[in-house]
Image: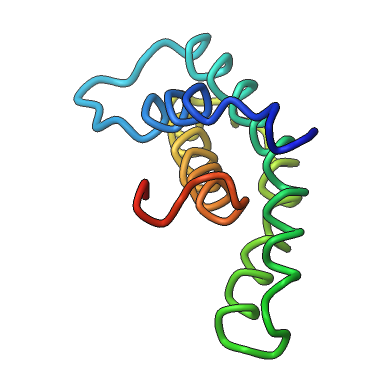
Amino acid sequence: MDVDQVDVAKIGDAIARALVKRTVLPPYEELRDLHKTLLEHVQTLLPLAEKQVDRLNRGTVAWYEKRSRLNTIPHEMAQGLGSGLQSADWHVRSLGYTCQFLLNNAGLVQERDR
């Protein structure tokens, strides 16, 4: 997907829904739908973030930290929600943080907007 085709506002909304402080866990179906949405956003953002990170000076601490984080994402995506509401909430929250990381490193958001 081209950078111009990425809906940053839509991704930001999904991140906000994933990371909202909850006093009561939502229904499993809601978490399942949000999980699916987040996975789609990760698939969109991952190649863009990889391209940006690969432009960094290899061997630097910044490159290593970001590259290491990128390397864990396929494993995170392969995990399901789990069988319980608590694990589903945890996985959705984790994907929300992953989407935030990818959005921040995909070259779509200006420094001042973060």
